[in-house]
Image (tube, rainbow, N blue to C red; front, top):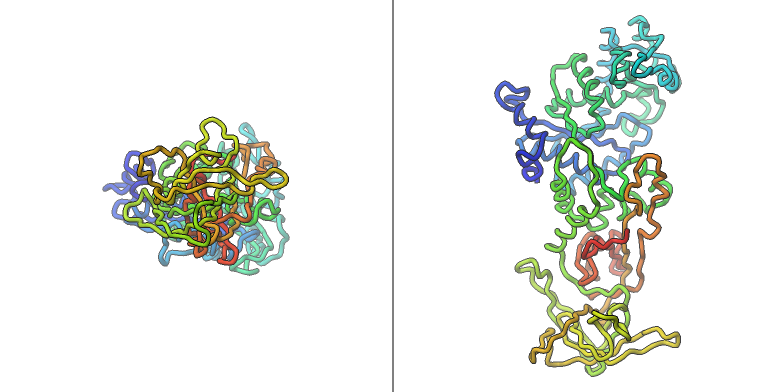
Length: 556
């Protein structure tokens, strides 16, 4: 995966690293060292996979190492639940960090010391402007920002900063700001806040701290302390790079990481904001972070996505500097391609109607061999039972067929998959005129679906033996958002939700072998699509999720 993702000539990050590893380069003689630093305030989503594949993939490509670091500098919504979920997702994708697992909070004491060092150098000061006042005094392109506290004496700032740590002041009363350039054209450099007061319990540190570093201050320090060579991050941090470099150059620690930005992933019909995904979960629009409609890795996994399909998707979109939005159809195609090659075939009927083979002996039955996967050499076969009473799909029968319809209608011959050729002789209706049973006769000479006399049979229909069929609930998932751009500025993304994103079918009939399916086991239900057993499925109550349709035909 790493070699494919980073093929030479197709990845500007690799071009940079190649140059820096050469003699005389910044990293000559060093091992490439990257990191993946998620914030543990939600579950990983498909957008994170791009960063994962780049961070871990680059390290693999160059024989280097990659750290996993929890960026837990904001205690407001961080939780160990998310930490464990992140670990599980990364392992599911096939990446590992060995013993290089860290928390940003491991470095709080060092960060505090570095901040004190900046104050002593006259490069940081305690500011008493409120957040609103800081915004009001930010200036514009023709006017510099202002702060009446910028020239506060060093000793006074040192005293106030120590008292901030001791908890003497309420939230928002004071901040520590870097003393850089109030007239900078890059507003991130206009004396940015690097510490704020926040009286909240931290998921690891408890109430030890009531001041917390801002990400732009913590990020370069974490990279330096871990001896990161290449700090790879998404494009929204490009304007923050001067601040990253300023921190790196002005604290007393001798390592030299380089920040490189790449375009983040955008997918249509999808939102990839953790804040918005959290809202979907907390307000009950979905059934949790692992709802199969969610773009989270846990949701994709529950839906039936495979690690290889997800990584293949990332490989195909490539690594670029320019943002773009990818069609969700490409993600579905990658899954469909993988499952077509690897999923076991099975017989299932989602909208069952009885089929009675009227000339087949009552009480007797036989067994047929059905191929496990025709695209996979040596995949073998499995046995399915057959008897007088079967189930077929309701739409596989039409009493008055339309043009081009080759399935069951009176007088027509149909091939029952891997079993016999049968001729439809009619149907049985209830008092309301609904078809409740289809009738047919089988030709004993066509066992296995062959026609010894060479006659042509155009239609092939799947079926399930009523004598051994198991009942199941099947969930058909469509796009969570009907709007192709629910994340667009000014839109209410909740209003863009697709009200028909889930259809639950009860009383579906599956071949008996599927009673033993375990969570995550994937199958192609012949002629219907790709499905997997849900995590809540049990032998007593089978539940299957549709992973993807056979063709690109999801309801939009």
